Every structure is written in structure tokens, then in C-alpha cells.
Length: 412
Image (cartoon, rainbow, N blue to C red; front, side):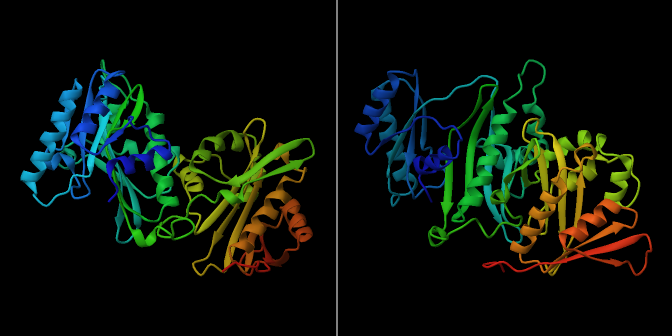
């Protein structure tokens, strides 16, 4: 179990704000630390540091409202005496002296990491404070998270509604809370050794967030395990599959799809002809429900992949290429759609090339697609790309485009 200062150093490295902390090894050092901090703040807090104690509140190991250096020393001595009464064998490793954070119209939240026996690491969010177990207002989500998924997690709790503001209570900084949740998600991805984590409380207000306490439990045997966390139920965002593509007078950013891209679909579909939509989805569609857009953008990269092409200047969605792998991860069905007004400049070819390279690197043996027989442009591009075109055995309006893939070195 990391000490509180060690745990706070970890979360601070991931961008979660924490109070300034001065480590004192004795009551005398606690007095000196209080003197130093009280020169710039009105009050400080003295907290027990002990690897023998998981929750400081269980042993009354936190002293608040310290206004003088002498009171800081006395608080450290009192904490030591109470700990010895609670557990004579417990070891005092020192004291953390911090400015006392007081914010009006603030909420105490809990952010956490735990491990589910089936799904592996999960992220927890909800109402925090010492009564977290009694209030029982929490929700969990599978990492990795982005801003959209973090917002969804917040909205699953009762405190999430309070954070939005009501009557004379101003709204808390939702973006800062989402950023903290995303930081926890990245910690899980980067550090397989983290078994559990609590940030309680994370104080949230209109001014932002700050973590007043944190605890992290690690598995020492997993510390040196290289690479991203292999215990995740959902593969992390594959950032190494981002690239820039220059076509005629435009520059496009190709990258894996994210949940936030659902907001780009309405404008994209409005600029895509009904014929192109019919060619892509094999039937005419007038409306795309929100649930369908969520399904198209919230994917598990382990089982499927979608690449979006974004205009570098405007950020608008210009094209999408998608793969759905079979359960044996041998064959994947592909789909491709380029905005109608941007066709004919090589964007479809660039997306299909990127998709093919990813499929080969991911160990797939071939990709296949169903193409309507009257989709002449797609059939021509497939032939030029090297696909074999065959008739569908059960539907004369369809053709099957198949491309065998050469396995790449180092792939499974």
C-alpha cells in the first residue's frame, strides 16, 4: 500500500490536482512544516502516515483547523498517542502537513479503481466522504474512458444531478471531473500493478477539483510487467494507428473512432447522398437513431475497428472505414463510406489501405465485404485494390469482395 504522499504523487503526475504536502518525520518536524505553510495559508491539516493503517479516519488520524505551529506539533503528538491506543504494534511513518482546503458550494466525491473477477479493472465514481458506504451512491464503468464515457458514468449517480447545479447551488466543473476520471482510466492502462485505488474525497466545485486523500494498492510482482494492461476487458485506444494523409488540396487525420465522434455523424450524414447511404448499409435509411450512433462509435477495439478521416482544418468527418471480426479472429467484414462531396480524390483508397494494414497487423487472414451489384464505383475500386469479386449464392443483388491478407512479422 502506497503512503498518501506517494499515492498523491502518482495521481498528480496524471494531472489530478492535489494540495501542497510537506512530509514530517516527527512532531517537531510537523511544527516546522506548519510554520512554513501558515506563512501563506490561514489553516493547515496534519495527517498520519502509516503503512499499518489503511483508513486514517478509523484511528482519528486527521487533525483539522490547525492555526499555529505549536498546534501542529500537538496534533502530531495526539495522533501518535491515539494510534498506540488503537494498535500498539502500529508504526508511525510520519505526518503529512497540508493547507486546509475549504470551498463553498463543493461536493465530496469518490473515484476509485477495483478489480472484478470476470471483467478485470473497473472504475468507480459517486458520492464520497466518510459516509460513502452508507450513502451507497456509486456507479462503475469499464476502462478505458473518454470524455463521453466519463460523462455517462457521472450521469448514472444521484450526485451527478446535484453536480449540475440547482437553486442557489452553482454547477461543479464537470470537465474537471471528467478529466480526473480519464486520468484514472489512463493509470489503469499504463500501470498493470495497480490493484485498487481510492480518491476520497475529491472535492468538486465551480472552481475545479482537488484530491484531498488518496490510497493506492499495488502488486509488486506486476510492477515490471511491460506494455499496457493486459487485464482490461476492453482494449485501450490504439493511438499508434493515427496518421496524416495528404490528398490533392486537403490534409486528413486518420485515427480510430472514439465515442465523441457520434457528434460528427449528423453533419456527415446530411452531406452524404441517400444512394451512398443505401450502398453502405444495403438498404435505404432516412434516420439514424441516437442508440445506433452510440453503437457505431462506442466499440471494443479487441473485436472490431473503425477508422475515421477528419478534415484537418475543420475537424469535420469525411469518411469511415470499419471492420467486424468473426469470433475466431480469422475473417472480418469491412465497410467503407466517404462523404459524397469528397469522393473521387483518393480518400476511400487511403481509408481502405489503412484498414487493410491494420487487419494484417491484427492477424486476420482475409477481409470480406458485401457490395450491391449496382455499386459500380465500389466494385471498380475493389478490383483495382486486388479484391476477388464473386456472386452471392443466395442474393443476385449482392457481390462478395474478398481480399486475402499477408501476415505481418510479429503478429499473432
